[in-house]
Amino acid sequence: MAVRRDMAGFGPGESAPLAWLPLNGPGDVSGRQAARPARRRRRAEALPRLGASAIPWILLIMLAPVSGEQVKLPGLDKAIWLGADLAALAFLVLRRDLASTLFGSRPVILLWPALAILSAAWSLTPGISAYHGLQLLATIVAGIALRATLGLSGVVRIVFLGLLGGQILSVVLGVAAPDMTRGLSGEWSGVYSHKNVLGGLMSLQLLCAASLFLQGWNRVLTGVAFLGALALLASSHSATALMAGVLGLAPLSVIMTWRQGNRVTGFCLGIAVALAGIGILVAATYGADLSTSLLSDLGKDTTLTGRTILWQFGIDQFWREPVIGIGYKAYWESPITTAPYLHFTTKQKVWFFHNNFIDIAVAFGTVGLLIFIGVMFDTARRVIRHFAHSPAYIEAWPILFLAQISVLVCFECPLFVNHGLHQFLLAAILPVLRSRPAT
Image (cartoon, rainbow, N blue to C red; front, side):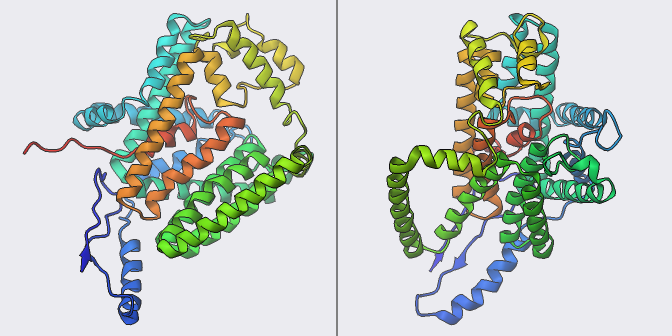
């Protein structure tokens, strides 16, 4: 007997589905053992080679988050993102037929830059809102171009290789100039501007390395990179990144269990339900003490290192303009907002509220919040449906990415920002949907 496993909406360069795999009876052990090596080879061979066109994308992932001041190359990130903007423009000009199909398949995410540009009409700083809104559009188009030209398997490997370069640069700089990479409490920032940037990128590298390792692609390299990313994540002392990495890897354990069959899945589900019940009982009994202890273990105080103060400033501003906000980036650029007082209170020159929901609420009000939630649900629906058609480990990476993002949006500002790596990748994880030929 044979089972057909099809997959719809496959982009160029994406891993091929497993087709017509023979299923032997439960007693045919030799048949199953003979099929295992073939399946492993098929999974590894399913990833096409990366060509020379991947090099600029790898350099983008590796160098865009790097702090130019840290490596004595001021303006490095701006130059790298300018190249990405030009790539997005070239994609729109040279691939107009493909671009129209792609934009037609993902209208929801394009509401983000449209709203940012449109907010110039009521923004406190209209010129800045329009300019950064155009940059946000270019960032999303660049992510779409990456997925359309290299496919999901190419995206994951490009991110992996780019972050691997960042790992190597961070270690080299840490050895050559430890004072430049280490904070007062011993936390590492590597070649990046802050420990949270290093931690966030290394938690992302864990997801890439794990997916590629399980897919069977260069297991020595991906295994070493996983351990290296884990070491750098621990060295960053970033509690937010640690939580994001743990939650990002959590769906992978569920997927691995599910692939083992119904019996194993049912057993593990029963264990999970039992543990959840115990956890709820313990939390209900010792909730306050546990939260205090957890914050202490993560190196945080009750203000989450000043985040709750930022959040209060943002919530107060939201209630001043709750419907459409005050415009994209306007709070931080306008002289008539409370931003200068916020900087004085926190003794930090921050440029976001460390919470994506509050940043969006301030800039775009309730309208922006609804669009943001709609985009996230639409993206999750699309990537889960795509994985259901092709349940390979490489296809699970977008799900892991969204799980990681669910933590970061609560404590950082990774999305809805121009020239943001996570924003770029959010556009890249959306499946490529092509119009079906007429029959």
